[in-house]
Image (tube, rainbow, N blue to C red):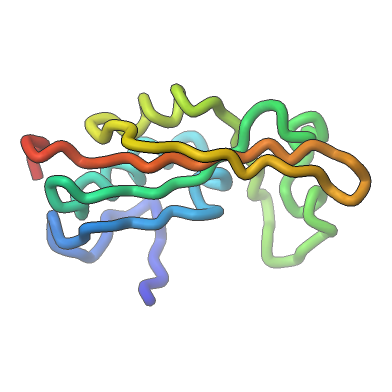
Length: 132
């Protein structure tokens, strides 16, 4: 396991992974760190390697709350000033260039109170010709 500051380059060699799982992470990245983080993932993926990434859609009930995540998630003390980020699949795909979509899925459900959780995931692949 690697615990790492996502604002710094990964201490890994280029093209060293066939698969990167980014689950529950992208949705909490500050906008300023999203593209750089995704470019680091592209860098460590081998040609033909895949990224599985989840995202929250704008229809998710938490978007309407408009509050920091620690309020949304019952005042968790370890989640300070982190917010949820909501987007459509097309926006996420554009941020992941040069990766291209090879699959997607829906994880939407409802809370016990009937609130809509609108979440999806994408499988993205690094082209064989993408520079390292």
